[in-house]
Amino acid sequence: MLSIKSNFALLLFILTSASNLSPSTTPALAHGARLERRTPPNTSGPYDPYFYTWWTDGNVDAVYSNGAGGQFLIQWKDNGLGGKLIGGKGFNPGTASRVIRYSGTYNPSASSEAFLAVRGWTRNPLVEYYIIDAYSPSIYPLTNTNVTQVGTVDCDDASYTIYQSQQVGQPSINGASTNFAQYWSVRAQSKTTGTISGAVSVACHANAWARAGMRLGNHDYQIVATEAVGGTGTTAIAIPYA
Image 1 (cartoon, rainbow, N blue to C red):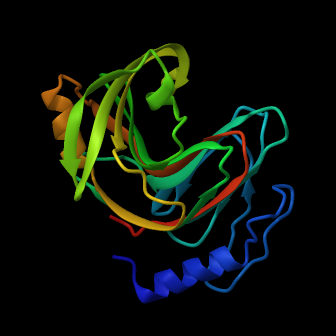
Image 2 (image 1 turned 180 degrees about the vertical axis):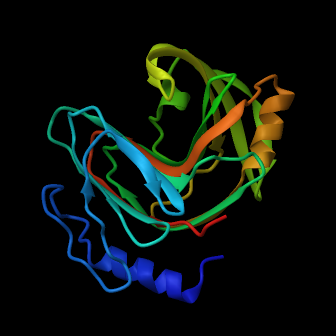
C-alpha cells in the first residue's frame, strides 16, 4: 500500500500537471514530485530503482514524464492522425511472483482507444503479455479477429477473460521485425476512469496462462502502462517498489 507521503506527492504531481495542457507544454513542478524531463519518444531505461519505457508511432502529440520514485505522467492529444502511444514504469527484470500495486488517475477521452494494464515481456519463448484493468470497448483483444479467447480466471477479486494472439514481423524487445505470442488477461468489468487503484497478482494470471498452454519464458521488463490510439487523455500513476 502506498504511504501517506507517497499519496501526497502523487497528488501534487497530478495537480501541478493540468490535464488539458498540450503535450508541447512542460507541466509545472512541485516539491516532492519533480519531473525529470519530458522524455522523447522511443526511449527506455532505468529510473533507479525503477524502469520505464516510452514509445509513439510519431503520429500523436504526446508527452511522457518521470516523477519522483514510482510516479509517471502521460499526456496525449489527438492531432487528426490517429497515432499510437504506449508508456509506463515498473521493474526490470519482471517476475511472475510479483504483486504490482498502483494508484493515481486515468482519464482518456471517450474517443480514445485506450487501456491501463500491467505489461511485460519474456524471452525463450518471446512473449508480450498484458493484464488489463481499465479499457475502452474498442481495444485490440476485444475487436480483432486474429485474437483467440482461451478461457477465464478469477484474480484479485475480479474475473478476467484470457486471450491469445500471434504477431508476425513486428517490433519487440528482440528487434524490429520478429514473431512473438501475445497473452492477454482482460478484466471482465473495466475499472472506471478518474481516480483509480489496484493490485495485480501476476502469478495468478501466469498460472492460468500456463494451464492453457501459454508458457512464459525468462522475464524482461514488467511495467504499469497506458496504451492509446487517438483521442486525448492523461494518466498519472504511482507504483510502490515491489
